[in-house]
Length: 94
Image 1 (cartoon, rainbow, N blue to C red):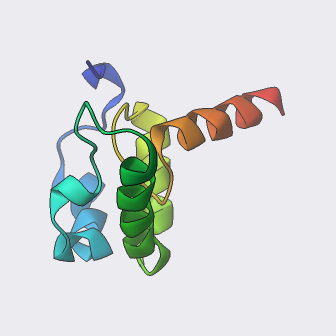
Image 2: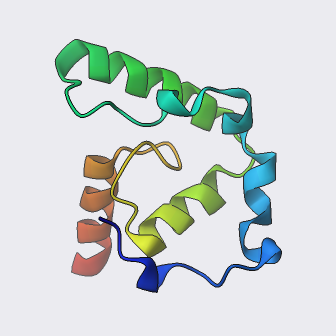
């Protein structure tokens, strides 16, 4: 379960960027895998999710949000949870 202690205050200004996301045109299931999903099926779904991120005007805001709250699920800001964890590890090493 995600820790909500790191979440920003529930102010519309904090989350307003989400209304501009390319993901608003997609089925949310595109960004979040079923628990049993593995291998090529998972990689294919993640590639579709990332294609939305690739053309998203708020991809940087999305990624920074996911990193700051340590979002444990889904594709956010064009990165999977594993990719986000790797990025956080690299940032901490600097």
